[in-house]
Length: 180
Image (cartoon, rainbow, N blue to C red; front, side, top):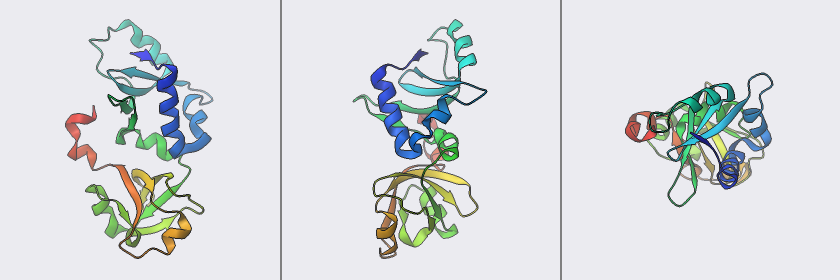
């Protein structure tokens, strides 16, 4: 495991800022428990600094994972968030969308959020902004990017796409062999 380079850190923070905005500081500098990001085999892990320092005594070949996997870097150098980061993103989410019970299963099977399935949507959510998708009982079930702003979504027909799916908790079953 090694620390991220400046370009890797920049790409990671750009992606996270799309979902949690300036709350990135809450991830890195919690008041009593500092955390850091480390990379191992193109995967980025979010781990306590204390544990990351202890892990330096383990060889890179022997270490499989450590902490929470936030995502991975593709071969082209782009960062892709994984569903394993949902718990941390949901705590600090800037914008949210709640899905009705009849829209949960289509979303969990990998479909986008339709306007007919939107129960609530945060006020003043801009277009192409990262959102966390919740069920109506406030359980985070995934994240995505808005297709339209809040005002435009209200005027959409019921079959129009309100948010593009990026990841959902159904991936734990569909893609379990590639997540870790």
